[in-house]
Image (cartoon, rainbow, N blue to C red):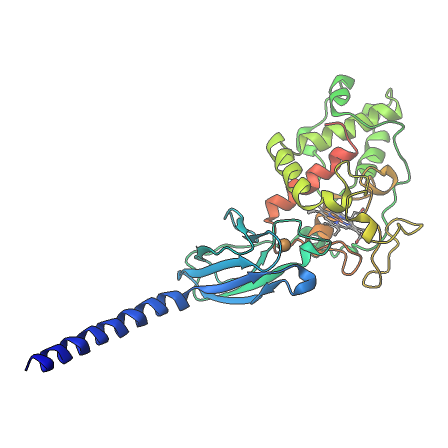
Length: 323
Ligand code: HEC
Ligand SMILES: [Cu+2]
């Protein structure tokens, strides 16, 4: 009798144990283990995740080599450190279906930016958002065509000097994002209001117009994004001399004259007036969104929001204009 009782108790304990183990392993297997490795060593494993709208996607992250970072493109979620020999857990919940890109946020090597993966989110949208296609698509711009400027200022144009020129510019006529500074300079130069001004003063007016079309907040945001994502190639001062630049090839003799998809080239020098002043915001934003398609310039469309890309383009003009 006593032995029977004991056996029953043992069975019950065993059943509870099995149930508990099942519950534990279930909650454990709900979390997906995500390993980070440098792009050359395979990047993220797995690199294609799926999720359902409104249902948390549990992740356990670790690195198999150096310190990486984890972030989801176009989301406000702060980046998570992915450390070797340690597990970090996180849960992501999506409110919109679609294809998201997750990416590494630490410069872990020359191919750092290639450390990307996707999250395919299915289900019904909880709210509707309308997205407008970028300008370069609507305007059907050729992003690979050279866009040299036929005039360049003698010194760096300054928005502050532009103010003191004293010509009242129509603020509502602030440059639309499809025009280059060179085009606007020609327009102003041929206008009667600038008759008594020097060429340099007209450039200062152009700098002022570009400054008026952005805000200090956007310039600060652009500066931070640039320092974190672009300076390694384009250089802190925009000269195209970042630490990664030597691993890309020399500048072609004609800037912009690259056969896209064929070979990598040196990062664009944003301080080169002849090149940059001939570009419009639409072209710069288009290049940032689409990338160089083989030139070495990464694509950032799935990483940044439209506003962040605008801030980046706004910031690039500070390499030409004193703002
Ligand atoms: C891995 C190196 C690399 C990184 C990182 C990089 N770029 Fe580039 N970028 C290039 C190269 C190389 C070119 C020149 C070839 C081309 O235009 O495709 C270029 C060209 C460009 C151009 C074209 C300029 C023109 O006159 O047509 C823009 C704009 C640009 N980059 C912006 C950015 C921004 C903004 C970032 C950061 C978000 C960035 N780049 C990060 C390598 C890089
Ligand atoms: Cu990394």
